[in-house]
Image (cartoon, rainbow over all chains, first blue to last red; front, side, top):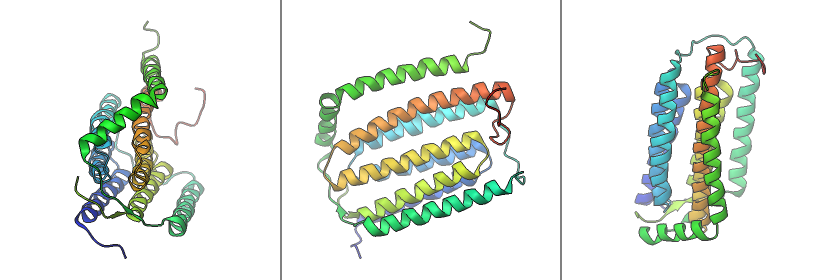
Length: 172
Length: 104
């Protein structure tokens, strides 16, 4: 059994919180509350990223995911005025059965793979944070510069595409 | 940072659990917004795995990959939500069981 350290306890607590609120997100019938539960889950995930010595990614997670993407979801929900999902029997029970079976099979396969290959070597301690971010930035802007520029074009394309899609037809 | 001693097995288990929850949400829910949120959750589970292995292997490449994944997720969310807005204008619903025509 692995030794229990403070950071391991903290990691497990944060991961447990993320899993708990992910369950709340899936189960809840009100879409706005689903989004808010996912915000909490993503904050907990940011804590786990810090513990995995990725403070830059944790900051990006909070700013981009919890701050931008999920707020975008909230804005769209506000625009659409989506009603609460009504509990009803689906017309096709075969669909539900097959879905549950697929989830079970996938869970068993995943756990079997983890048992077979998940050699639990401990995640080693992190180097100091500022040097870490500097190294990531250097890697990003030297070796992956082309991908970075392609990414900016992708974001531009997404901007134009979403504008065209959401525009009212007939208004030019 | 806090220190070391997080077993990789814990990271992978948490990631697998999050991915399963996301998969269950995609397959079982009918609200398109919730399905989309579940997809985001699955992407985060994959990010957690990548970061766990990156920390375990002392590599910074993992952080770069996750950075790209998050940026692409932002683009995907913008386009997907625009599609939902356009869809809602046409059909007045985002229940995926009632959106069953490719052309309407």
